Amino acid sequence: MNPLRSAIYRYSIPLLRPLPVRGGHISNRDGLILELSTPDGTHRSYGEIAPLPGLHDETLPEALEQLRNRIEEAMVDIATQSSLHKIPEFPGHLMPSVQTGLEMAACNLQASIRGTFPLPEAIPSLVPLNALVYGNPGNIEKQTLEHYSMGYRSFKFKVTNRDADTVAEQIRLLDAELEKEVEFRLDSNQSFDLDSASRFLETLPKQRISYIEEPLGNPRDIEELHARTGIRIALDETLWQSPDIRHHLPESCLGAYVLKPSRIGGISATIRLIQEAEQRNIPPIISSAFESGISLGFYALLCTTLRSATHAAGLDTFRQLGTDIISAALETEHGCIPAARAWEKSTRPNMEKLKKIDQWTL
Image 1: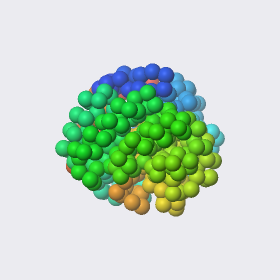
Image 2 (image 1 turned 180 degrees about the vertical axis):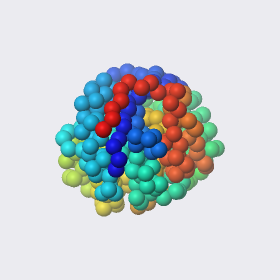
Image 3 (image 1 turned 60 degrees about the horizontal axis):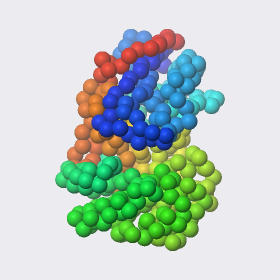
């Protein structure tokens, strides 16, 4: 590969409504965009570094500092490994969000130069999405029915120990209203103990519930919760907080690995967990951390590499953004995202929404 140029941009985009995160709420989504280009500008690519407060250990300033410290070395790695037709390896410890942004930008640059998709196994297909539903009871029903009319058939409800009774009532009402092919997913961000989770799950129409994501503060009780309720458990935070636990849980009690690449540790790390999940016959669900369309388009393409294309991805978060930093907005068709089209849009940011803060030439 020819010598490279790189630049770092910063963005801040509003959310349509405050997003609950650990320790409070945020009203804007802030992040960094890494641009790689050939010297003549013929080929350009972008990757996103956007740690989410309350989810990532690193802050945005910490990610920026590491990116600045490692970018020149990373540019050498990208240039020297470009002929290997695989995701470049970056030696040394990188923060998960930084690893993701570097890998994304490198894969997209290779794709631009070769005129291919950035992932060899990707195909231009439709990826079903689960609709993210949260808010007060009236909004939950309204959002669900609106998304149902748009073709969505998978719905994810946020629930905590504090609002469990209200959410359970809404789920029972929706169960009576919607057709049988609709699935419900729950996400409680480890807010229950074993007994309270058991009581909550026993009040639900179990035939509707695909899984509950991270219900327990103590994930070592997951197998017991499944034994009590018959409802499968999806792993999200446990995959990085206590990664060894998953190896001791039987496949029969696990409903999914929910994989956020920017928190898992990058695209390569996510692919390794996809392969593990598929070997165990556990659905891998690609999910976002409320990133911009630059990441979402790449993740949509990643979804097309899965062995089963029937599991809805957690990429509907773009609907929570008041605006986006890509030139053309993402769109859905009957509750699905056209993956190839989404990725193509993700390669064309609106530069007016980005502020350049640094640049280098190798």
